[in-house]
Image (cartoon, rainbow, N blue to C red):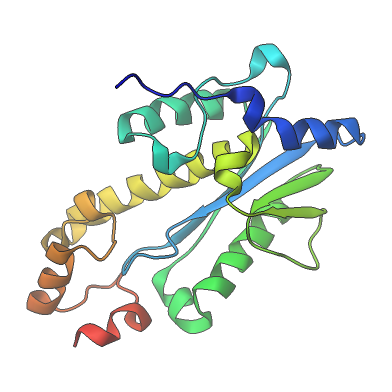
Length: 207
C-alpha cells in the first residue's frame, strides 16, 4: 500500500486560528513516557516558525513515525525552532508525587523556560497558574503541527536516554522496549528484580 501523505495544512488549522486572533508566538508541548515501568517522563515545548516556506514537511504524531524518521525530523525541528525547552521527571519523583503531577510539573517548568509566548498548545493536559496562556487539545499530537513537533522532540530525547540506560542496566532490554512493560521486560524484572530507574509504584504488582 502507498504511504498516506501527511496533510500539513490540516495540521496547521489551530495555529492559523490563533494567528488570526493576533497571537504571534505559538508553542506546542507534549510528553512522552507516562506509561513505562522505568525511566523518566520527558516533556518538550517548542516554538516553530509558521511561515509557509519554513514548515518542516513530514511532521506528525511521533507514534506514527519510525525511529529513523523521528531522528531525521528531530534534527530538522531543532534547526528551525526559535525556542525549545525540554524537562524531565525521574522515577523517584514519579513515585513520590505520581505520574500526572510529575508530568504537570515538567510542563510548567517548560513554560517557565520560554522567553516569550502568546499561547501554549498542550496535548490534552489542563494546566493552571502558568506563566503563559495554555490551550489543551485532546489528541493534539495528531491535530496540531506544533504539538506534533514537540512530541517528536520529546520522544527522541527519551529514547536516547533509554538507550544510554540500556548500557548501564543491560538485563532489561531498554533499547528495545524503552522501559515499557513488554513480556520480556517483565520476565527480566521478575528474574533480576528492579534497577535504580524502575518506578516502584508501577511494578509493585509484579512481585
